Length: 119
Image (cartoon, helix red, strand yellow):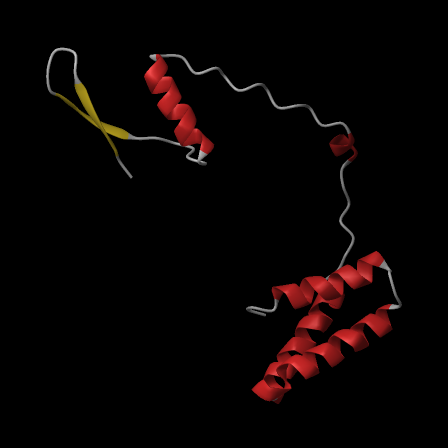
């Protein structure tokens, strides 16, 4: 359905939420689609009608296992160890969603090391 995800989800919402009779909701959505897209042609209006119908037809009940009622909490994250400046750098990178880090290194002296992040 391409870019019509919102239309699909909107019709599914109205079917599940039961805030108004579903036939009325579908009629209102189709009227709005015709008003919004009629200048783009009948094919575009029809695609939106199909998206509305797809949202209604795709709704189905999903059985949830009883074991999900009382989930086991995640283990606490392991505390990072190491030189404070390196730990701070890694924590900052993790805050931005980085989940793995690879480095290439080059020794330039007894106590100095150049690190380059590798993709």
